[in-house]
Length: 84
Image (cartoon, rainbow, N blue to C red; front, side, top):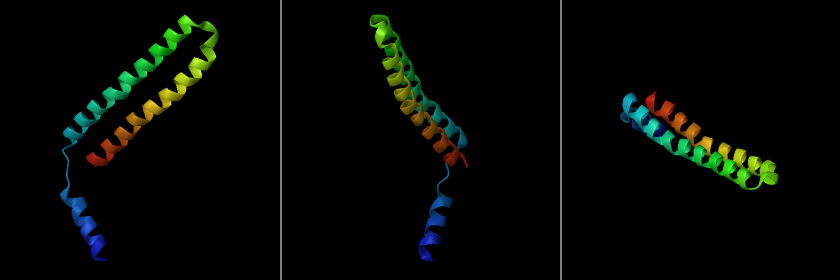
């Protein structure tokens, strides 16, 4: 019973300003944004150099795009947790 009370007390003492959380998420979204740009730049460059590998490059590009976007989604979830 005491560990539940301590956990509730610890949760109540941590308060993050909502504006600060928004700035943190904005800074955290820069990385995935740059990553997506680099991924598709590489796919376009590879397709221009070797057109017959387009389907393979697009598959790899979309897979890495999904992995990169997961970082942004994790960031927005943490933002909503911090701002509530």
